[in-house]
Every structure is written in structure tokens, then in C-alpha cells.
Length: 227
Image 1 (cartoon, rainbow, N blue to C red):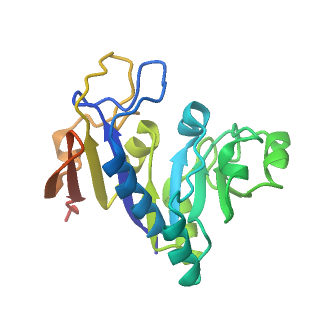
Image 2: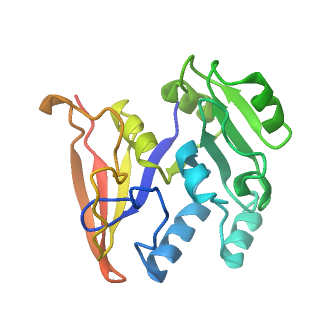
């Protein structure tokens, strides 16, 4: 059984995750950062795509020492399991996610990944092969379920999130909409990739709450399951 998948993202008022150069920008404020840190601390695992690793070099660690202590007191590692979807094994061996903070790391690759690159990553992470040309997300999430991972937080980027929606693998979506306009036809959005052509295929969301936060608004959606 796959984990419960919660996508969390911050986007500009015009729906952009960053600039067209994929340069990270501050979209939300301190209150949202605290919210996200709390959410991280309460999840079994947190996952990003290789594009996010290459653009932002995130550590995906829990930042608040008190939250880390709560995890340890509950018998968990300081940080959730940190996961990269990386079909071609492009994760740099010096990436922060591989070295900063304690806890398990998993890199999901495909059969098409360069064995030499996989060998370089193996000392730093558990490298799992799922799929031929690209990672089979459904298969990989089922594997995560066998590890006892029940709640999986996804923090980007747009290509990964788009693929998860495409395969019907998202259960909840938290969207913090900031008070800025980024613009640019080529700037990444919350669900990039192939997209949907037919209206009957569109994922339908149910709005659970809308809460002012910082100088923007936090929307919490659940995904309506298709019958």
C-alpha cells in the first residue's frame, strides 16, 4: 500500500514556483516557513525531483531543534527519510541532501541511469531502481509503503508534481500563494510536464480551508478520488 501523498508548495500570485532561470526566490514568509518545518517533522518521508536538487540544493532537514527532539523522543530519526526522484542519477555527490543532517536517504533511478553515477551515489544513499527510461512513480511509492512510510510530503518541483497528479498519486495539496508576480511563459508552475488534454482527466480538488498567512494565503485542498 502506497503512502498518503501530501504536496506542499509556495507559488506567486500568477502561479510560478520560481523564475524562468529556475532561480529560487522567497515567495512566502516566516510563518509559512514554520508551518512547513512542522509539516516536515510530522511526515515519515519528504521527496523532491532532481530539478529541485540541481536548482536549490535543499537539505530537506527539520530546522527547529525542538521539533527534531520531538521526533527523537518518539523513536524516530532527527529528520524524515529524504528522497530524490532522479531517473538518470544526476544528483551531485556533494549535494546537501546527501550530507547535511542525520537520517536515511533514498535516490530513485531508472534502468537507464549511468551505472558509474549510481556507484558514486551508493555510499551516500540507498539507490533504488524503478522503471526503464524514467522512474516508475507508482511502483516506487508501493516500495516506500513496504518500508513503513505512511505519510510522504512532496516539495517539488513542478515536473514531479505534475507526474504525480498525472498518475493519480496525490491525496492532499497545500498551496501558499505569495503576494508577488514572477511572470514568464517558461517559468515553472505547480504542475508542469505533459499536462492534461481532456477535461474528464483533470484532477478535481476539494477546498478544505483558506487561511491568511504572512502577506498571502494558504489553501488546503484534498483530491477528489475518481469513481
